[in-house]
View (cartoon, rainbow, N blue to C red):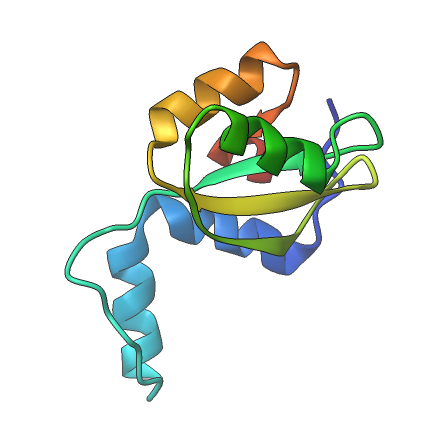
Amino acid sequence: MESRLQPHTQELARALNDAEVVVRQLESEGFMLAKSKKNVEVIAVLITEQHSFSENTRLLDDNDVNIDYAYSSSIHLNGKSGLILRVSDPDKSERILKENGIRILTTTDLQ
């Protein structure tokens, strides 16, 4: 599958693989960053006509998975947008969504 990502999104994908380097670079350029003491695990799903935002969230709710927060992203694959989810149980969420044919995006998709 061909990725049609914007250049800044490709840079973001590289940054995800080495966040410490990016933090040092930004701080050296004078940026002030809010840092977490731990990494926060999120999942990214592809929103399509068949698998809408509401379907994704309904599936998780029906299976007792809490969504702490969700936001859309500048990820665009084949004209579709990505949805970033912070959930109470990432492994369970991925399993449920995959079982229902919803595509989970990986860092490979972003490169």
